[in-house]
Image 1 (tube, one colour):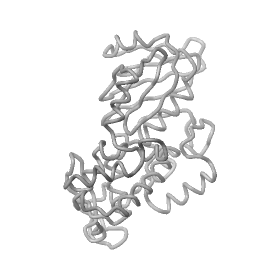
Image 2 (spheres, one colour; image 1 turned 90 degrees about the vertical axis):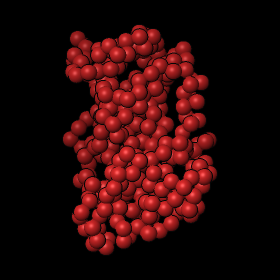
Image 3 (cartoon, rainbow, N blue to C red; image 1 turned 135 degrees about the vertical axis):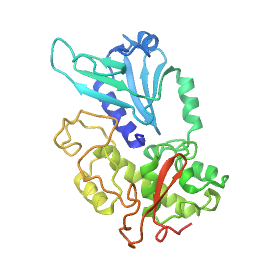
Length: 302
């Protein structure tokens, strides 16, 4: 399932390609035909992400709410053919087209037309988003308050979008290992300082995810990524920045991972392999519907 950084990156691409234009909206697959008919011809005002939700605002208080789910993708591509973009391929739920770009949405779990009030209500149900840290409603204290009321394992809490928004299975496995936290300690017993350290780390890691289009958690990769970025804002969408997706056009975005760095992690999908720190075997177990990976020797902290 695409995690929060993917949605923020996608929102930037959609905003760059369509904000301030009046795209044609269609549903080649037919499953969003009524919604597309209501949106087509309206000016597209902006696109933004909150957690794993993508919100595309149109004039007239109409908002397209998308949740990609497990297999969804939203491709944003430029085109130069005066005859228009290529024909849709596969089950395209929603297509946006203007004079220079098109975007195809496939496989999403949620595709619905909502009002700004309904959008606000959806956001209100979510926990704070590390990628929106520093804005109203995205203070870590909100997640701490909810964490303190549950006895569920912290690894399950990190997947609960009402506690913290945008974190998925890969980030939860890796960030718990980075801070040597026992994934099964009850949420209410997690020390405040530990949770705030995790929050701060997620801000940095997820911002790098936006910039590079992939999840980076190994410290050598994190250091290299920060060096490449320099003073550049990692969350500022810039289709001309060559560091985003080498070998691909900067304005090409998929709801999948990028490829600047090798896809290496400390514990994620490394079950049975030796821990990179202590050498003991990485363990795995299903928790909150996804495979959790951890090191039983390294991860004992509360």
